[in-house]
Length: 473
Image (cartoon, rainbow, N blue to C red):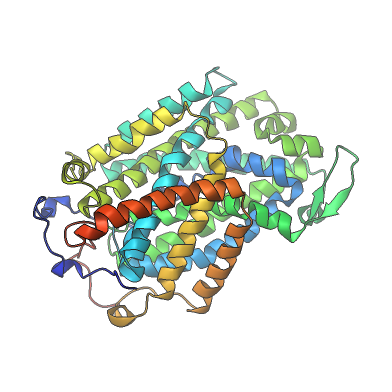
């Protein structure tokens, strides 16, 4: 790589923006438990189960559980890459800081743009699902409900991170309860057996069953990767985790394991319990719960899901504001913009960056985002691909002997991951690939025309050093 990062200590100061003061370093305030609560909330098991998974049921039918299981196995390899890179580069910049450090600043910039696509699209898409699950008690327009959730999440995101860990922890308990109720009811009213998980039912009730094809599973893997994607939030919080060299890996791997169970078990139960193919592919899980029990239980589950979506909005705004804060601190934008996004409020949160991601998210709730599911899948897959490349380069030079968590089976894991993710990209819709690629091309032009000519004063990725961090293992 020809345009790699210099160490932070030797980066030239910007002539137009003073070097960030110590107050612009986020304070370490949470441990593994708080980090896991926040990260699990960003995976949003219940909101993912009730908002995103129904779309997979509609296209994959009984193959949905198998596709999610394969996606989760791929995410284990991704989690290994995140854990190693996150302990080597504990920065609020997350993926872009890791990739910039290991693979060069252009690669890091492209990862930042892909992550920005994801963080701007996903929260409003999830938030608009609130209206469906408030329907038993209140009828709301989906766009209005989504905008309200985004604004509420923005206000919560302005608070201290420790306070948000407790808020999201309470909501997470309700999420898990809702998922557990669905799982118990689905298994108790099973209409089919384990064999249905490896067959794709076609037609209506009484229709035949076709075996799951590899192409069918691959077509849904990009969305399946997105379903558990939130485990990567741990690296965004690494700058605020105590002892990140140890706790980042613990948080990433624990979150992936727990979220997979919370999501996959109810998906299997729903597959077993749906009375027929039409009910399963219709994806109305609330109606299934009501049919399996009564309206009171259905209402309870629906309200828990609505709270889960609010929870998801809070954590996503927290995560996204940290990305924008870090990009400004690393001088990715013109000087006035950097100064605004790098400001910290009285609670230690980047308040301008929080408003900058929350308010546009509320506006996006009034935009048709159906096709952006595909763009999100392509963006997540491309981002994971570049992270895997960075993991392949993580043991060169000074990083070879750095004190960090190290993945097993390196370099086989990142090599295999690169090959699989590249293949998954080739199987996505051409329109989604073209749209995402066009955005990446514009970002590359910005890099070539603005950032690269100012390489000594722009896009200087910061990796904060913690003087209290132990030097030994």
